Image 1 (tube, helix red, strand yellow):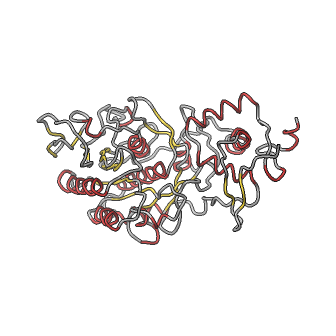
Image 2 (cartoon, helix red, strand yellow; image 1 turned 180 degrees about the vertical axis):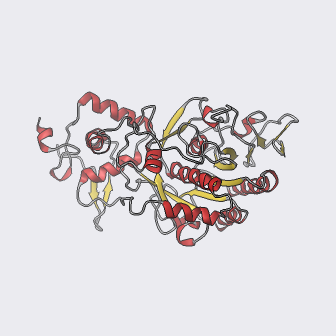
Image 3 (cartoon, one colour; image 1 turned 90 degrees about the vertical axis):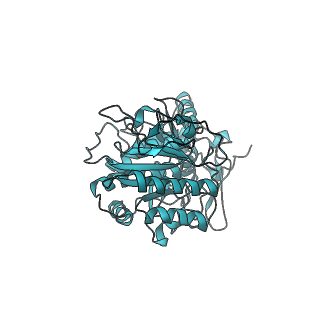
Amino acid sequence: MSAPVCATKTSAGAWTLVQPIGLPECSAAHLLPQFRAKYFADAAETPGSAGWQWNLERVVKWQPDYNTSTAFPELNFCGRNVHVFVLDSGLNMAHADFADAETGRSRVGVGYNAMASAALPQPSASSAGDMPMSNRACSPTDNAEACADKTGHGTHLAGIVAGLTHGIATCATVHAVKVTDSHAVVSLTAMRAAVAWVLQYTRTSLGADERAVVLSSSTTWKSAAVDSLFAALVRAGATVAVAAGNADADACGYSPANLGGARGTAVMTVAATALDDSKALFSNWGRCVDVWAPGVSVPSASARRATDYDVKSGTSMAAPLVAGVAAIVAEAYPDFTPMQIKQWILRHAREGAVKAFVPADALPAAYVNEVLGALSFDEWLAIDRASRERGSCGGGGGSGGRTIGCTSEEAAA
């Protein structure tokens, strides 16, 4: 039987991958040992283990590998007096990661359900903070169900921004602004209502020494109306970080991602990198991207229970890291404008660290990049289990006379 084709080369010379997960011979089990040898030789943790924090390693420690036995440096700031508004699928307000590290009190502020079609319960007559409750407002103590997270996406994002375990700005206050029950589908009506609420809240409820950071995924379309909403947030003094999108396309074709980079606004558009600092396979790219951050196999808080965690991939996992850094900068420099915060982040980012997904001429290298951008947490665990059972090389054929992930000597053994 002929060897399966795991990748083909286009007329332009680029690799196109074909059913990489579906064919056993193209299994990541053949490549994972090579990746481990290069990046995890001295690592204390690997994907799926309890202490897995590779994204924080890259952002905070700049490690060439992922050796979590090396202590994280002490940060002088943690986002005090900064309010982070997460426009997404809601929030698990009871998660332990959103508690104050010293007092144990919740750091979750008043939230809002911006979905016009939502059937919501009526809250009690109490109020939370300075904003009267309505059937769309929510807090940890009143009407939390209105902002409940059914997909886990919003909770995951909030945990990367401000979670005690996997977050950066661990003192920031988190506000859930629910715009969807399925993070891939957001209506313009919900986005309008969400931004209007954030603008009202920041204008009426934040003190003179408090700052706002807004985090959002991008839509799957380009809309001048959506762009104008996020421009309004910046004009009102909010620092905004948005995901570049997951279509492996030009971010300039999506909203609000197209506001970043070459557009010159204060909105920060964030693309995603994989574990080897390559462009994540799914990540959007282009002139509208401002900065790249880890977005593959990222751990964070789960919507299931108060102590559960999930591992997810996406530019939605990269943007919260930048939002978390923005919260720290906002605390450190409270007089900075959104544009000054953006410029500070870009000035301190590492130049030339991201490798583009353009393999030279080696199928294994092409597929490693695919694997690092496509695997879910469950697939990581399955691959890990399979590779341990079969040893370092699982055998199998590859195209072009190559054996995927193994040397010819290993394959013959």
